Image 1 (cartoon, helix red, strand yellow):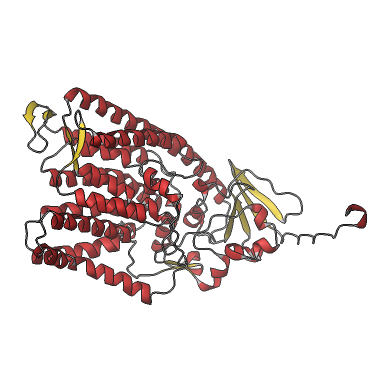
Image 2 (cartoon, one colour):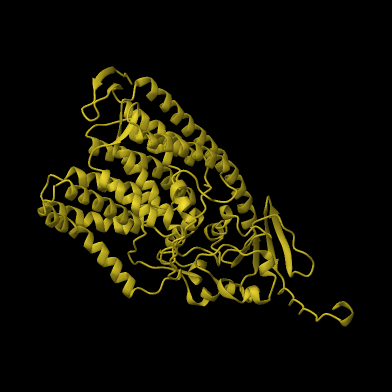
Length: 537
């Protein structure tokens, strides 16, 4: 590509800049390559929840067979269906592992592209600056494997760009256009709809405050709220009439979670996986804070909030700070809005008094961080992929359609990175796994197996499994009661060896994984003996 150097004065920020034709496009391609190519490098991705999504898609595509004894997949439209809708359009027989890998590779590049489009609409010109959103592309929802949400966010950003672009059109036209758009966003993901609603609310308040108390703007704003009412009504109807969610209704604000609100666009607390990726993310966090602090300068290179997105930025920032950690039984809600807030903040700001030398140095730092993070993720994915190959070797010994109880070695229950690896037993052996995440999806466990499952729990410790005492009968672990009567196989995800008298016979072992056959129920634990008189003193 031939690039022409052009000196010009920006009409938006008044600074003298040197621009090259096509440079924003090159910046996008570089950021997208650093973010998406590492995802395509290896088949299995180190994303905590992704095995659950892959298993759900496999169940949705499987008619009859062993899985039909354990699970049912409904046809109802639910506000968490982005990947499910694309899966319906995928060629019959497509590998759900490959499908999810492609979807997760699309998410970062779509996020960067949507941010750049939003900036183009808000600032009325293409710019290099919004390409820095690549620094946020490996955010916590992405690293956790929130497939539907990560896929939906770019659509919400593009819908906001369209809202700004059509501000000069009459209310009736915008109402007719955005009613199906808001319904579509709601269907993709509830929080994609929330993102657009909050951002639009902030924009309309900004217009009202800037109209010098022209109260006609209030009526205009109320009219423009109409496209958001059908999804809201849909949500209320589902809340009042739908069958109770297996996740329950727990809502917790979580003061500790406020730290994650600030860090979630950059790092993810996914256990022992991804420390180097998090290190690169920490560097991106520090650089982003530095960029943000320049907004308080009175001279020199500094960011300024300019254009129509200031109100949206403020509204999203407030919503991010107030979002609870748990909402109606759904966890990690608080890490979802911050990545959108940063994208809108980048799109709604521009630089003033930025000389070309400083811009080059900062661009080099951004490029180095993106390259380092991409290499770190590729190395992590390579190690993870090799680990999953060991898991596949072990799972090959499970009879098709057999229930499998997953377990962790003592002290490993909190290792989040491997919480949902047992879902691959569903994909490869059509097995029943009691901890397969059900969530707010169309997947449900059949009534006969509900007592032997949990909708959102991690695998228990083998110590907990082999203890038939009160721990196995109380609270969330109640599904472990008499587990040996339903589960002929035990899959241990960590190095561990069953002792004599455990009722377990080793079938095979590969890497860190072991498969045991249950030969008999573990013995009842002895009741504690009362202390003798000679030892009571």
